Length: 71
Ligand SMILES: [Zn+2]
Image 1: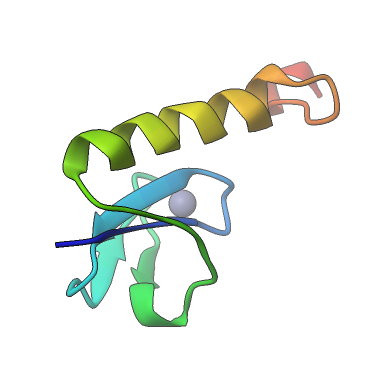
Image 2: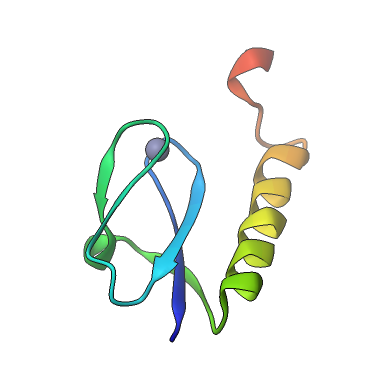
């Protein structure tokens, strides 16, 4: 089983199993997984969780992107 890693329009990085059709983000938006641009594919839930964490850090930990509370 592969896990797909993708981003919601709100910026959050999410993952789901490859056979998942829709995923509800914590922002409330329901995403059509098959229509998302896949950033990465992981081969286990652990690897997917790690990849999501790494990407969140890259996005929110960097100086290029600012989080909403810094605007
Ligand atoms: Zn979202």
